[in-house]
Amino acid sequence: MPSCRSNSPEIARQYIADVLLDRLTVCKWVKLFCERHDKDSQEGERRGIYFDEAAGARILRFFNFLTHTVGEYAGQRFILSPWQQAYLYVLFGWKSKETGYRRFRTSYLEISRKNGKSTLSAGVALYLLEADHEEGAQVYSAATKRDQAKIVHGEAVRMVRRSKALSSHITLRTDNMFDLKTNSKFEPLSSDYNSLDGLNIHGAIIDELHAHKTRDLWDVLETATGARRQPMLFAITTAGVSRESICREQHEYVEKVLEGSVKDDSYCGVIFTLDEGDDYRNEDVWIKANPNLGVSVKLDDLQRKLTKAQEMPAALNAFLRLHMNVWTQSEERWINSDAWALCGGRTEIETLRNEPCYAGLDLSTVNDLTALVLKFPRTGDVLCWFWIPEDNMTARERRDRVPFSSWVRRGYVEATPGNVIDYDYIKERLRKISKEFRGLKEIGYDPYMATQIAIQLEEEGFNVVPVRQGWVTLSPALKELEREYLSGELKHGDNPVLRWNAANLVVKRDSVENYVPDKAHSIDRIDGIVALCIAISRQINTREVPSVYESRGLLMI
Image (tube, rainbow, N blue to C red):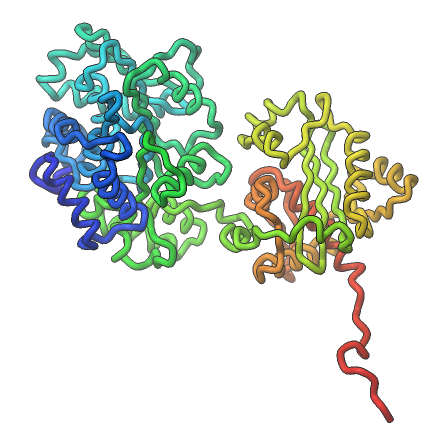
């Protein structure tokens, strides 16, 4: 971008120095990115890594061969913004002493819209194709749909056409470009491509990773780089909404790498966003999420969109996610994810064995998710069990876009044999649970689905109580749940399945502010929350009222 006069390592180093000396307004993650580079520079010899100034400068010089092709800068030389120069300088400059090849194999860059993601990605793809000394390089722009994958590829095609140096080496074809001399190619690739087998990837540009509903394409690309000397997965995205996605997984991994809790010398990433506590209405902090503010991001455009967001609450999350790069959830979702996260503690399980508790059972249709929740009123603890039919789990995983198989491996979901829910299996688990937690008083259930199993449980001596899914029973339970999690009394143990259900919950309200779970309009499955509400409903309806004498004692007359 035309925010400085040239692409050079001096500008990259100056940006890093300015961040370290607090001369620039940046977020925590950008500061940690620069600190990591500085620390690595001091410790690299001992750790077997070194910074190759020539390699860092080479990627920057390559951009001098490129020009902008659209918008107000069309036809001008592609001068990277200082932050872009610093990121590429670090990404391509670090090497392994043992091999002499590039240290970083995965790049994750998260930033707000209109900060030059696609043009930067196109330039990186062309570098990997033409200037990375890789014979037979296979480079792809990857997305969930081929049309999306063509965005970066199309920008690269326009760059090649405008560059005499590149067009003399690169041959352009429909949806493909290749260099006959090195037998290298660059083409768009998507998850709906007719075959993803046989890929031998040197470089993959993954644009808008937040739009990927499953991790399938990411895994294919990552495993297809194994035969290359210094492959590069270059993911660039805006913040997303799903907390159970490949994008969120990479986001959290970058945070851990930058904080130092995870050591991974092959992973490079940075996030441009607001810091915790920043007021999104304060224009002074906008540059943290928009380092191209005043260049490709226009201040008056952000001001106009903020005004709209303040007048139309439904637009606020879009403003935060797209323009402040803040992870959000649908504005309809009822549970505050930050407050919910603060309730992730748990009492030691052993101390709950004899603790009074109530169970809520949300029995699904025969091929869906079933949930059982124990609620312990005195401690606030919540214990969950989830079941899913084993034979259709993979199909459900794709349909719901959530990691059921991973949850099964980690013990959060149990896969029952067959392609339908095995009620006998669940009854057996209930017997074991009741023996483990001897304070179980009641099992509440939705009579719409579970009448037959309730009759069988009652015949075995269980105290089962129907809880109808209506205003009278569930509105008080939802209000109690709201009170407990907002006050911090709830202890859900950070169960990821329950967290997913909580994030999906949408409620239906009446004219006097009663509300019930709205399964029809919730974002996705809410079975665990429904089961929790059933348990809380029984907790409320059987709550013992303490004697007045316990609080004030006896009156002597």
